[in-house]
Amino acid sequence: MIKEVTFYAAYCDICGAHYINEYSGFAAMSDESAMNQDVSDDETWYSGYKDGTHYCPDCFTYDAEGEVIIKY
Image (cartoon, rainbow, N blue to C red; front, side):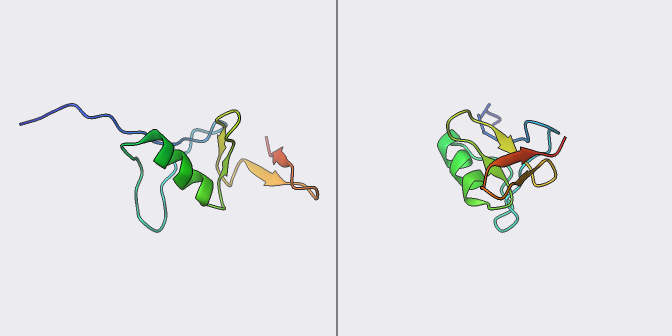
């Protein structure tokens, strides 16, 4: 039997890179809040709770005050 299922995945808002957890190998989750938490826990990605943005390590850095700086 084949059934349709819904999963949530995170992508960089700038370049479109797909987030994959390097430890678990998960690329998608069945729960949106769990996916957001996974990206937030990964220190290499930026996840903005207020505006829902996600940036991969290639597209952002932090300035001296800890503010996000977009590289492009």
